[in-house]
Image 1 (spheres, rainbow, N blue to C red):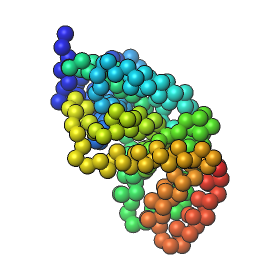
Image 2 (image 1 turned 90 degrees about the vertical axis):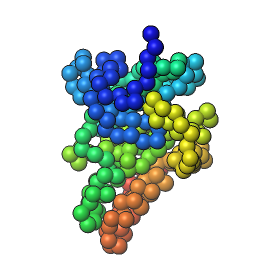
Image 3 (image 1 turned 30 degrees about the vertical axis):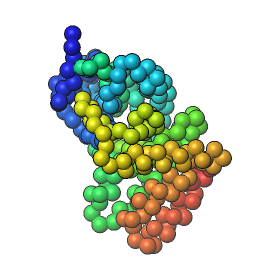
Length: 248
């Protein structure tokens, strides 16, 4: 039976997951709200770019990555519940990850929607949680690869770091010059995203003797401090130097 990649995944069934509506879409992936027909709860399903079923190297890497992410158990790491592969037309397959559904947005949304200045206490609250999540992952010998506010979900004051390993998987040699829309492949007219991810990965490789978390936290601190007054930023900088010690 030929399975055609839907232009819209709404209503499609991926294993036990019934896709309800799209939550987000980037250059490489789509995220969908889904009903888990076994546990009867809502989850978030991330659809990765389609690949050939014969691309065993990529699919094996994906499986290993998903198994590894699934071992992470921390209050500031978004839980991975399941993963799988879904066949589509043209002898291709879409790999997917199933995660907890967090409807309340990201740190990036919070920064953009802040009325006036983001309080320094709130900034420090999130920065500390990000540091703890990164430190825990490093203690498990796992590097995130794409730390940024858009990958930090917020729920009732709790920060959840998401998308472990996705950037590294998609920046592999075979895919680093392409971006994808799930169900429709296309070449990128702007390599900015790929270059950014490659830069992060190159930086990781240079940090064999230096904590990867420290410059990442510095970047997040700078982002947050853009919403602070000069006195707030000074206080935030002092607090960052303390937090950086968690992973140094």
